[in-house]
Image: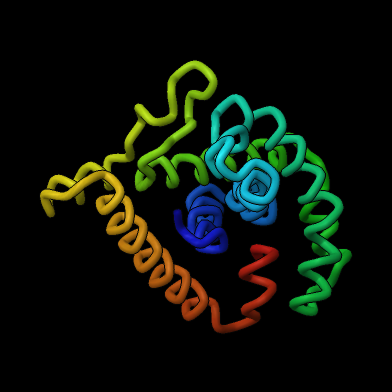
Length: 189
């Protein structure tokens, strides 16, 4: 899986493609599904995989959406304001609940699980209706076939490829936003 923060470029780029989408909501949505990873790992190791409910469409668009709207509204402004010295009032205004904010949260969530689908050997996208072990990501299959290896090695290669690619894109985004960097990267202004 890509490092959670490497999902940032997808939210950022989506906000540049459609200016109506709200950057803060896209960013929270693009990382929110991974909140279940440490919880499942700590409390259910060996019982269930580390991706399940919030990495499924039904979980993402219900529980995930509620969590994302709440985090965007109540946690994002003070946290990002404190960490990056951005005006909290501007952040609160950008994070107010509107139909576009909710849509942006949902889009960020779907972007996350869509990206994860590409390079995982286990995809709970249609859980509980389809066995997640039957949905092997296309990059995993491609690399497993290309190097005539098993699915797990294909996953490792796909995972490395995805992380390196996203890291390069993240550095490019940071580099492009030299002026007023933190406001542009976290607030979208």
